[in-house]
Image (cartoon, rainbow, N blue to C red; front, side, top):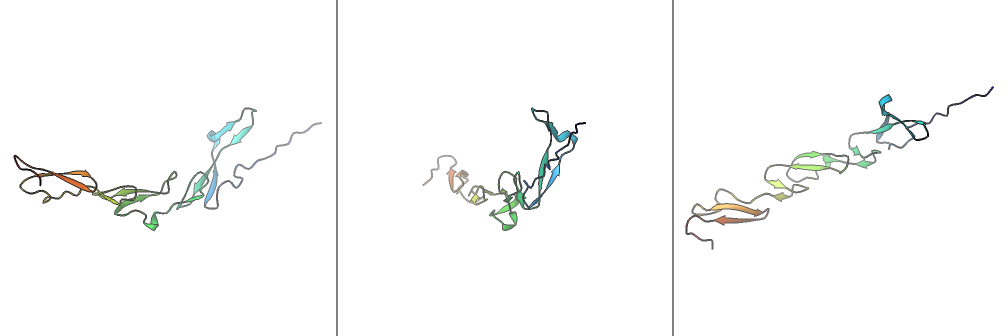
Length: 130
């Protein structure tokens, strides 16, 4: 009489870093490879402050990388992203947006921001900039 044995393979074979836990997906997360072998899918669930497929990349908004930050988000594909407070832009919120103020131009001229660091006054009527 011949017998058949099942060689159990642990899908959570320490691929996830120590900064995470491995979770097996339910029956809808299984696939069959071309040879008909059933494979159980797994996913690393990262601890707070870690990201990436295997939770091996440290991300930390607590170090305050953003200047003039409104909100800092930790992402899986980047270390972080800064959402800047009004008036600032750039990856680190380090560029002021617009230098125009209510008193930037005299005699009723209109101030326009050319780029984050320069402005231009458009004068009314026949007035000219000097």
